[in-house]
Each structure stands twice: as structure tokens, then as C-alpha cells.
Amino acid sequence: MSNNGSKIDTIAGIDLGTTFSSLAILNAIGRPEIVPNSEGERLTPSAIFFDEESSGIIRVGIEALHCRYLNPQRSVRWIKRQMGDASYKKFLDGKEWSPVELSALILKKLKDDCSVDNRQIRDVVISVPAHFDEIRRKATMDAGTLAGLNVVGIVNEPVATALYYATTCPVYGKILIYDLGGGTFDVTIMDVKGTDMNIICSQGDHELGGIDFDRKILEIMRSFYKDKLGAELINTEEERAKLEDEAEDVKKTLSRRDVAKQILYGRSGSTKFELARQVFEEAVAPLMSRIDILLEVALEEAKLKPSQIDKVLLSGGSSRMPIVQKRLRKMFGFDPDVAVNVDECVSLGAAIHAGMTLIRDNPLALSTGIIGGLKNIRLTDVCNHSYGTICAPIDKKSGKRVVENRIILRKNTPLPCQATKTFYTVAEGQTELEINITQGEDTAPEYVNKITTHKLQLPPNRPAECPIKVTYSYDVNQRMHCFFEDVQSGSVLEVDFALDRQGNMKQNEIEEKAKRFETLKVQ
Ligand code: AMP
Image (cartoon, rainbow, N blue to C red; front, side):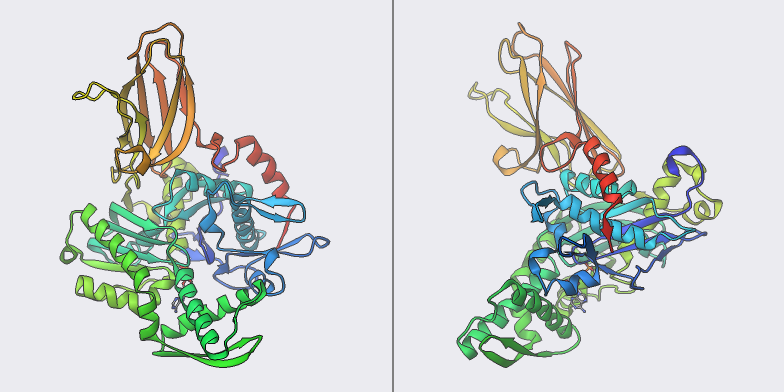
């Protein structure tokens, strides 16, 4: 295993997607290959179904997707949208399940299915949307640990796509990766010279993906049924579950045909339903506008005009929609590139990233074949958000204190990076300092996200304006480390995101739960 210096037999990359997940391993010459699950499928639906209490079986994948019609209350889908949300809990049979635990069930299914006698899956890199914040990244890593995996790193999904693409075919120039999956959208701009890749910037929205397009169709179906038969199409959760899938089918049909036809079965009878692609495209125009804005912001951050982009690369199943390709053609003046497998490129790229991570951290543990296959790849990623802290300096003009957010690490700084700033205590005899770690660009505290709050204890009997040194660093795995130091006393607070109160678990809690997870019957 990687941590005791002996050879690592299997290195894997996992795409933990909103709607589908997949696992890829590196072969003997460092090329990634998808490993099918126990049903022989290359993609596993990210769906969970808890069998009735007596059986104790937890189904994950295609079976869970089908079972949910029987009892939607015992099923979970799209849990990635809730990742890092401390308030979300699924209550079942007297137990509560957090998004981390539910995601761990999906990872456990992938791990168990892909582990066979001569190949045990343990060292992995898991992909996350580029715009995932610190809390969601930590939650994803915790899910891996619960599933019995050794998470050697995490990789941004568009970076994984680019890694796979650039190691599969020759790529040069400014590349825009457009990743529209089941639940999230990411855009990343990078500078690529063969296998030398430099990320310039990323933008994204974790509430914008294929399921939002399905919901638009569902709305159209409901109002059509109401107009035709004067009744509600959806009256129960069971009916909703079935119709959600039918709406998705209609959407996929519209990627191939101008019109999709379906029979809508409801309590007040059935009716023939037709949806033209044009009508669908009008209905989803607000979603496409949100994507356009993110594209514009990314181009602006990269200081590039659309004409300076050499290639647009598509990733994610929803990029198959003709409207996506049409809008990109209009914006950039050429067709986007669909050469890579949009469903599998993230896990394939994540496996390459896992190999690169281990070459950096533990090269002696790898075979020469894998090192040879990956040694020429260079990747420089950037910090995906600006991180700062709340302070109250004295305004020079008014002489009064103003509360503001001060950025310490700036978005799009190449990784690894570190920055230190000095702040000052505000009151005489101050024995405690409230520390806020923020994420966001604005100076106004109300427009940034406070990701965690801690207290630093200070010595008594001191005047105001004692210096506090604040150091933030960001590692190549997109993980942040923060130190707050009272300069005079040397007292230090190291913020460990594992100890925060945002839904992440403490390390010992994770280890304990991981033992319980080993015994769960996930199939
Ligand atoms: P991913 O998360 O990349 O696996 O993408 C899954 C999403 O892609 C789901 O919302 C699917 O409905 C969507 N998708 C897959 N195939 C198509 C297609 N042919 N047309 C439109 N959307 C699709």
C-alpha cells in the first residue's frame, strides 16, 4: 500500500457524479481503463435504495433506480447536490444518513464491484466540480474514507477531462472545457502545449445540470395533461419518480430527433404527448442564459475573447443536447470537439491524476511502466475561489472602524500557493478573537460565504492593535490550510476543516464509521 512503501497494485480514479458514477484504473503502462460494475455496466447510476428493514440490503445503481418506483421514500438520488449541506438528512428505520454517508454507499459499491482477487481498489482520486468549495471537497474525501478508500487526492472534473484528452490526442493552445453533467455545470479555460497543461480559471454552478432540463420537460408535461384532461398528472411521489424518468427520456430523444412522442398515463386517463425540440429549447433558454453568463465570466477572468479560444472540449452527458453545440458554435465560430467519451472522460482523467499524485508523493511504490506512461505530463492548477477573513480596520477618512472582508488568497493563483497578512486586535484587554474564513470576491462581509468560524484565545492585559499573522495555503489537491498566530505570545490556531461544524465529521468519528460501513450490505 502507498503508506508503507510497498508496491501499489491498483490506482483508480472515480467520477462521483450527480446521476452516474464510474471507476477507472491505470493499466501496466499508465493508461486508464474503465472497470465495469458487477452488472457489467461501465456507468453506475448514483442512485440508492434501502430495502425493507428486515433485509438490511442497500441497493446502489441500476436496481436502485428501478426500485424507487416501488417506494420513493426509501430511495435517494442526486445526493451530490446536497454534499456539504449540514441540514440535509435522510431518515430511515430510525437512522439518519448524511450526504457524506450516502455518497459513501455509492463509492463502496464501485469499490467492491471493481475489487477482485488480484485487484483490490484502495488508492483513489475522486473528482469534484471545479467550483466545489472547501467544505464540499472535504465532504467528498470523507465519503471516500467511509467507503474504505485511501483518497490520495481530489481533482476538478474539467481538469480530469483535459488530462484524459491531452494524453489521448495532440492538443495545443487555449482550450475551453465545457462540462454539463447531470447536476452541475463547470467551465474551465486552460493553456495546453501537448502534455503540459496550465489551468487559467474555472467557473461553475452546482445547481445547474441535466436534471434541471428534465424538470422543465416535466413542467410542460404537467400543464399539457392539465389542459387536455383537466387533472393533475402527478399526485404521488411514485408517480413523480416515474415521470421524472419519462421526462429524461423525452430530453434524450430530442437530442436525436426534432420531435419526441410519449403517452402520458395519469389517473384521469392517458393522452398522446408530443414535444418539439424548438419548444424544449425555448423552455430551457433561461438555463442556457445562466450558462452563457458563466462562460462570459470565465472568458473575462482569463482575459480572452471568444476568438482567442482554439478549441472547445465537451464533457458530461448533457453536452449531447444540440442546443449546447448550437450555442457554442455561435459564440466561438467553430464546432466544439466531441472526440472524447463525454460520460467516461472524468474517471479516466481522474485515474491519470491519481497516478501523477502518487508519482509526486510516493514514486517508489509505482511500477516503472506506470511512471513511464505518465512522467511527461505537467499540470498546473489554480485556486478556484478567493479566500479571506473578516477584519475591522480603522477607516482613514472617518476614523471609525469598518467591518470588511479582506482577501488573503486570490482566485486563479497557480498552485501550490501561500499568502500571509497581518491584522490587529481591536480592543484593549481583548482575550478572544473571532476568526472567520471566507470564500468570495467582495469586500462587503454580507456578499461572501463564511465557510467556518473559530475562536483564538489571547493573553490578558494587552493594549489594542496587537498583531495577528494570518497564513493561508492551498495545496495541489485544492485543499486549504489556515494558520492564525498571535505574534507576541506565539499562540497559534490551525484551522482543521475536519473539525468544523458544517456537516463534516471529526477524524475519529470517520474512522469509527468506516468500520461500520465495512459490514454494510451494499449491492
Ligand atoms: P453525467 O453526469 O456526465 O453522467 O451526465 C448525466 C446527464 O446527462 C443526465 O442528466 C442525462 O439525462 C444527460 N444525458 C445523457 N445523454 C443525453 C442525451 N443524449 N441528451 C441529453 N442529455 C443526456
